Image (cartoon, rainbow, N blue to C red; front, side):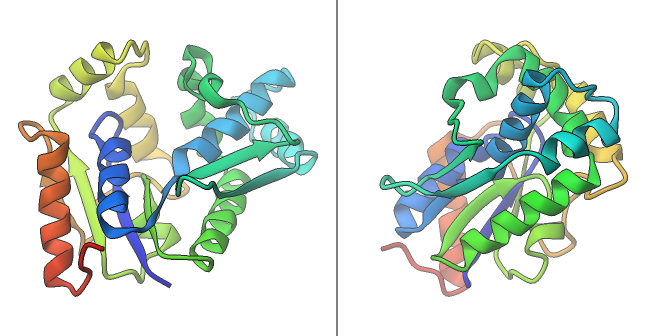
Length: 214
């Protein structure tokens, strides 16, 4: 089992960098955030209270969640057979996903699904707790960061409406699997690097650890 864990806060460049690194290595790419967003969308669709862990757990208990790796080498997720696609990034999901992701039952199930994916093939997996909670034993851990101002500017440029400072606060203070830097993670400040520049830094470090591009 080989997992490259790439963690970090909102708008640090995780998704774009992870795809680049995965392509260079010939690994599959898994965006763990899409699973949390898919659950959040289902919770909202059913009109459940996102501030109530009990209500969220009830929705989760009645949902069929499936995830896998598509033909293009990237992960997909379906809830009750539905692939939400672009809806996973809409404003309503953005504003509620941190609340839903903080529920222990949600994190437990999604962590189980992510570990199952890693048994299939080598992965680059990005998220907020991949190196600290989901795969704490992987020797390939990276933490991407940038100043809050730069990350907010990136989010605004993408057309996002969420505030990264609020997301940071919720993600880093939740009781279950909070956002934090693993003690053995390699930290990359992406503030003034291009996406390719960040990918270069990660691939070069992986090369020293015995993981070489395809």
